Amino acid sequence: MEILVIQVLNSLFYAAVLFLIAAGLSLIFGVMGIVNMAHGSFYALGAYVTAWSAAAAAGVMPPAALFIFLPLGAIAVAVIGLAIEPTLIRPFYRRPEEYQLLVTFGLLLVLEDAIRLVWGGTPRTASGLVDSLGLLQIGGLPYPVYNLAMIGVGIAAALGLWAFVYRTRFGVLLRATAQDRRMAAALGIDVGRIYSLAFGLGCFMAGLAGAIVVPSQAAVLGMGVEVIVLSFVVVVIGGLGSLEGALVGALIVSALRTITIQFWEEIELAALYLIAAIVLLILPTGLFGKKA
Amino acid sequence: MSAPQAPSLARRAAAAAAVLAALLFVPVVAGTYQTQLLTYGLTLGIAALGFNLLLGYSGLLSFGHSAFFGAGAYAVALMMRYLGVTSMELFILGGIAFSAVLAALFGVVCVRHTRIFFAILTLALSQVLWTLAYKFFWITGGTDGLRVPFSKLTLLGGQVAFPGADAFAKFITAYYYYVLAAFCVCVALMWLIVHSPFGKTLQAIRDNETRARFLGVRIWRYRWLAFLVSGIFTGVAGSLWVPLNGLTTPDVLYWPQSGKIVFFAVLGGFRNFTGPIVGAVIFNYLEVYAVAVTEYWQITLGVILIALVTFLPSGVVGSAARLSARLKRRREASP
Image (cartoon, rainbow over the protein chains, first blue to last red):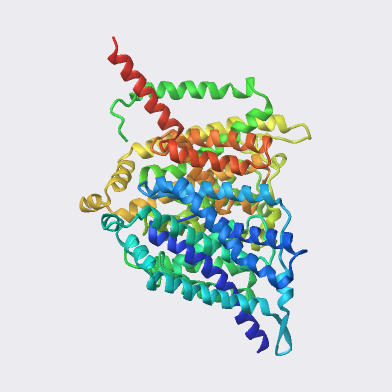
């Protein structure tokens, strides 16, 4: 029973991380129609920036204050995203999809090596953050409070994003631009600014995912390349461009992953990829996607 | 594809013969290392040729061709390890069989979609293979991979073997000609395919799917066949590549390998028959020298890729063709 509770909590923690990444990916696709292959690298960037800054400040700041580096890491990634969108991505909105995929694939290669150039090949952690919150006893088994807090962050991020997209003026502009770019531009919306901000927001979410992961597991090279295929699986199951889909997809994928790891570890990822392929076959637009 | 003054068939044949003649002399003038590099380039060229039947001629961007390349490579390694096969001809047949089965299966699923969904489907399916090769280590060797030492290999029905410690140079020379022959066969076959009614139909579907459907073309069947042929060519490339590399690891099935194959096509120019082949050969040199010069070779390749898609979308070959056409027009304009 305790094991089950812990597995459910683990699954929810993982779902929170996956949701943050996939929601950003889906947001960028929904608004500008770009599938960002480099999205996983923004997640890795968030993890590295957070681990590095938290480690640098660990001597001078109390452990509890180090939590400020989680949002700071995400903001750093958002700033990088805001710089990249107008310079690299913007020339490609009117070009065929293969070029859009390729330019973001090029960006992925650059970002992966840039991380190696700046932080080297040794794994980086910020495990002090997990220790500072201590452990909780669940039926006699210790469980880090940090994970529970981050499940909370995931829920807060989902609610915040929903409110932002559906309840603010900017959200209205965002959805209008996503639906009909030319009409939005004709009505006087600064489409370029909306695109930049949407890309920045997507990068912020990916960076936040990296930031909340790095205290519980180390930032390593290749983590972004590994996660991107999994977040494709999430958005394919949920529906490309749908935020609700990203949430449901993340919950499904992390639950499936927990179950397969428990019972047949070898087929963990293979099962997930196969399920994504089957969903695409039966429901091309996913569970929540709009009809093309 | 606006090429009204395309070179005539005779001129193309003459150019191809000249290139082939030059290629025949490479092992004579160049050292073992350069010959080996070019052999790598030629095997990758076959993969690019297969890939481009989908991207260039069918308009389908596959991000999962590592699956077929890896299938060809693993077919060789598994046959050598578990069946004790040493003949390269049998390896190629095995690679063709393995990649054909795989492409037939994947194709049924993938050709129902186009554009971004096609790319993601091929990506997801290829990664199924990657995780299997990675996780079922007692069969595939896991991350250590499987060795395919050239000393165990025989060519031409067992007539040519490479025993002894100093056989490497001999192997490279012989294997270069072997790969070159396979390469010529593949190029000729693909040329026939894309200029056949089948190839023309694929291009018609690419350019206007609705119109092709109204003309009674069975779109999925054509796309499936293209997928199958494309997968087999890439599988053959993987089979030829693995004895050269001496080892196959799950990395050849990992999705960045698919990205590299896409890179070949874009580098050379995928709206062009020779583009992807030239792209593969150039990419091979680029990668080898970038790795030799700097530890950060990925950044170099990434910058080149971004620059290419931004400034030279028709690739090296496409841009060169356009440049020479412009020069020719200028010469004709001025008396």
